[in-house]
Length: 484
Image (cartoon, rainbow, N blue to C red; front, side):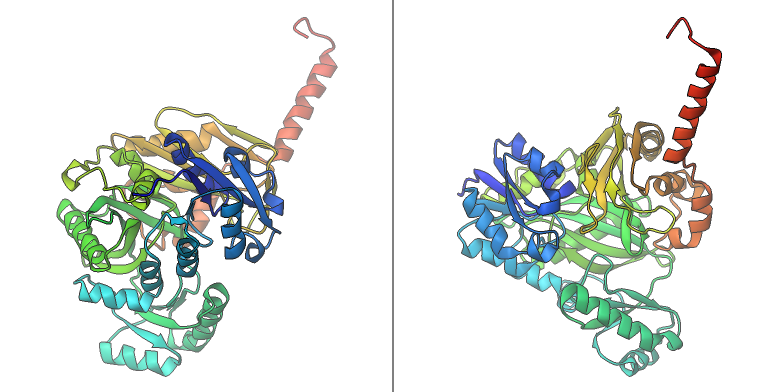
């Protein structure tokens, strides 16, 4: 059995923040890596030591495999945790870590490779008896798609996806045959830039689908345990911004079925560590379809921790050290409801990135709130990386309680100035009557964006300065007062 003494986190910001805290709880030292613009970043201060690995472009720093492994040796780290994003699902990096004699905290490289190819993953799912969305793989020309649609009687819209992709990149919705040729070129170009491979697949587009994923943990002793499901339906540009657990969309029987199918798939690939099986649920037919396996720690894993009381990062550390998972399936009993809101540095109206210095950051911690914070007051948000700066999670005995806690946090207890964030949009979403009724789909934001924006109650820094100026002017006009 291996004993991990020091973990290098091959990441930055919120994911590094998250992993460092569990390592501290388990008396494991940590090493942060950082690029030049991140030299004063939160994760650098939190870790026990930090190593500079390159300049701003990710290819020179957070995506530079050799520099990260060299940093592990330099800092005398004996294990690497990839967090999420960057190299977290790069099977070549995972193998390099193992070949260097370090402990990889995650699933086996071969598992990452298999599940990183959407076509192979789909074929494995079929063999495991997991339902998949009707589609065609390995397309190069529009005639292949037209022939498939005719043969299978599939109607528009359809969706094109990068077969090696994820995170919403290389995905293009096609509404008619007129759009098909251009959509193929666009999807292939995006796939090539993002993943170095332009292979595509096409699938039936489920118009008002719900995005549901099942959290799995597994060890080297073939213990496979699900930690129930999360609802990740509310998305912008195919990327999640609000998640909740459990899902308000499915019945008790459907919950049992979807979790068992997720376990079947993970057993088929002999999965180890923490991972997630994603499904698309069609509420009109009450059917769910396999989407993909995320062979990493998910951004939204925290809400599963809140409803189960488990530490998923700790389970990953235990599995990497060759330990058995210390729980059984009957012992996993969710007893709360939890929400997560992703605070991204983006304009809430246009989703354009918003970078710069955070001139004010006020966070009032209160009952039933958990915050993973990737920034501090005075920090610079650089333009080179993912726009996520904070995760706000709330919980309660019921869904209504969790929503109320989130409303209180976003509207009263969180103040970020100097940059724009998605906070006004998130607040509009959780206050929308359809969200509160659990009635929404993956298209909800795009369909209701004007209505959501109209609900913003934004006060700009200029407005605040005007108020202060007016107040000073009034006091000056009155002359000296006793309280002064």
